[in-house]
View 1 (cartoon, rainbow, N blue to C red):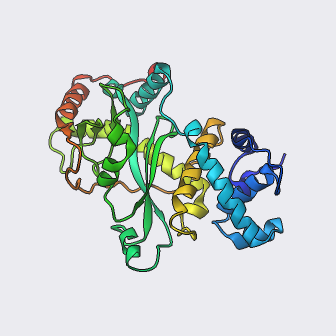
View 2: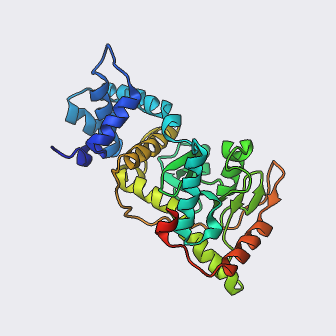
Length: 325
């Protein structure tokens, strides 16, 4: 059976799952299967309407309509595919998974890893375009995501322009403002670009450089082992949709969040059926200082981090993976 991944970036099994989730038997147009393939081919070839038009022998205007319609349909199934752990058993599996990644039982309360990803775009013309230029001087839109221990996205928030600091994006996100996850006593792992918090969103970050003391250094090593799964998740998604993420998106900037969200949904579907692509590029860690507090009242997570660090130092034994996964 011919492999569908070179042309559509999804295996046949992942494609079947996607079509089942969409469940759209159109009574008009080209039919849901063909239109879904048009959308996936458009993603695979870097959002070129001209290339898709030639490949499917369709007018470019038809390709444009199909792409936008299917993108909206894929985004509409987001909460079926990108969601927080559904049951206590699912949450326990995530926490045990992070402890396994960290190789230390002090991380049994880790319930996710968070980071931001800059997606290159073609900025809008005029003065507004400058706000999309990030600190590396290319225009982008930010995807904030939380993943589980397997690299599956459990929360995404996309749309802020690239000039905005990750910590500010965080504070405006539903994850921060609703404070519904993780449950009390558990935390999310984040890099040094985020604040270390206990409330309203428990975030545990590494000790900032220069790191003083063996205990803090040891804590940072275990923290990095567990947190790096979010970098791997971004890397897998970028590898699958390299034509989207490794060049500037040639679509209107207001449509970019739909495209990015669709890619995150497809990433999860592929992981669910074992269709995995090893990441090719390394996500660069952002050690920029947090930009300060805004809006909601917060409680520092530094004392909690110190407690975890002491636990790491006290427990000499390292987790054996099969005991906790």
